[in-house]
Amino acid sequence: MAITREEVRHIARLARIALSDSEVDSFGDQIGKLLDYTKQLDRLDTNAVAPTIHLADTGTLLRDDIVCPFEDTEAILKSATDRAGDFFRVPRILE
Amino acid sequence: MEFEAVIGLEVHAQVSTKSKLFCACSTKFGAGPNENTCPGCSCVPGTLPVLNRKVVEYSIRTALATSCTVQRKSVFDRKNYFYPDLPKAYQISQYELPIARNGHIDIEVGGQGKRIGVNRIHIEEDAGKLVHEGDLSGAQASLVDLNRSGMPLMEIVSEPDMRTPEEAVAYLRNLRDILLYLDVCDGNMEEGSFRCDANVSIRPKGQEKLGTKAELKNMNSFRNVERAVEYEIRRQIELVEDGGKVVQETRLWDAEAGVTMSMRRKEEAHDYRYFPDPDLLPLMVEDSWVEELRGTIPELPGPKIERLAGQYGIPKYDAGILASSRKLADFFEASVAIFNGAPKTTANECVHWKEAILSEKLSPETIAHAVEDRENGTISATASKKLVTAVLETGKPFRSLRDEKGLTQVSDTSALDAIVDQVLAASPKEVESYRGGKTGLLSFFVGQVMKESRGKANPKIVQEVIRKKLG
Image (cartoon, rainbow over all chains, first blue to last red):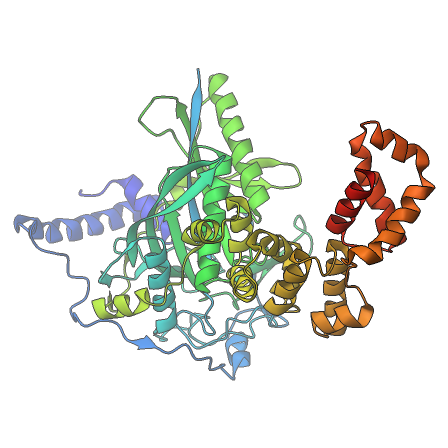
């Protein structure tokens, strides 16, 4: 397997996904296969090739610094699972 | 063993634009919760970021003012983390290809000059703000305000070139002055538009290899940066001397207790899995744009101090106070352009009336006239202060007030003769002592004459008259 169980657990934790021990094995297997497959690319010598960040090589668009307030903030608040007045309300977060 | 500290600073400066980094929401401070939000900065799926040209422009100007190289191509990346202050679970930042690199800021500590490297400047968005419901222990929920989400920031990262808390503060002050001169950030530390994190480590003196660093946060004034860094250096040295080891972690400065406290271990937090944001094409900056912006860079504080001191023959210390604000320095020069007979006095007056000048309550003419009248003996120093205060109160021109209030000094010797005679006649003992060699009594006589003339006599002329009479 191209990935250890610890690495699978670490990735799952970063993605906030709870995995059982058997799931760690089965996902580890699948991820390992993907990694093995993409490993074929290592056969190419890309030392002299700059990474392709985007396919389009034009620059990003820029907008002028003009304020245009969004009229319906209520719609955004309404779509939240929980709110308190004009705040979004989330389970308590403490460091 | 002797230790030395190694300090690097990361400054987050909020860029003074009207709208946010990637959307058209207002950046105004003090709005109601979530008032300045839209689907973009509240991270509704499907929205796309569009970069604010002004933020790029201000970042380029900052880069030029700190002698950085502006990168012709820079890239926006996603910094991934889960926290409710940023609902889309990533912050748009620049990682491998920031907008600028390799600059420097010159500082001076205890008369000693030093060049501090600027490693990089990158553009990124700010996150929202969390408020905890109820008291901390009983809080069941946190409240999220996304007004700050998407605010434009420049992160300016120094090289670990500082060795003392004083150097760190000098660097910060100079950087803040530069940003204020450029008008790209309001520099308000308490409101958080100029925030600083400090990376602090120690190593045995002479050792090349860097020690393990702690990252300090939550210092909202220059004084607190100095105290926090000072404390942290001492803590690390004591820890190592007691056989302990510094661990890599984030520590919060508690200003009230005067200590730094561990917040979280760094390793876990480090896994941000940066990758280029597919929603944003690379930022391309043409040479012609950079050159155009180079032309907008004003004379910066460092060179200005040197020039003011050289050109007007004033002490560097005074020049430093004048140059602490572009407005004050401009006012000084405008005032000297009207009366150039005593730049040092003009500088003193500008420093003395600094607040009124900065709030635009005084004109350069007022200070020029005040200095000129004093220098040629028309008024006394006391009268000058009284008159400037009167200008502030009434808004009337300095010289009309001077004539109106009859505050011109008596420099006419014949008019002073009588008063001097009267004073000398009233103090026969002192006259005798003076003639016996106690020439220090001269100031006593001058004081008496000034009192008799109710401050209107010209002290220089009074001295002459007394000397002549007693000589």
